[in-house]
Image (tube, rainbow, N blue to C red; front, side, top):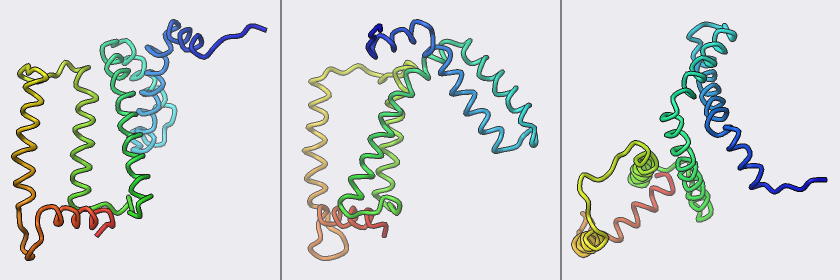
Length: 180
């Protein structure tokens, strides 16, 4: 009996074009078909939904630059989803309720997710910073932000007496994790 390893199988699938043609087609076909079935744009005509989904899927795989974007974006987006799920599990483990996140915690989470998705999509679309800075300059800017923002954050006072920025921030996080 011939013995093959998993890496050889993946390489063979890649050489057959499964990742460049079949999987993107299947993904787009399934998404378009599900949307058409749910929205019932063509009524309850499943056969029309299949044909439209098939045509859109086939038209997509002809456009290899779009397929390249999908093949680059989806693994990164999947990594982001895994990170979010792990964060929700950690929140649950420390006694929080991830389904009731609200306020500043939810807002910060949404901002982080949007930035992560932009990061995941940016190289494939050719986006880059409008200026090129060296690692040293970037580290200096980060250091300055920390040394300016941190003292300002620590000395900020709220309406309650003796409640500084840190305790206010921690109480806000606690309320957000509890869903208050």
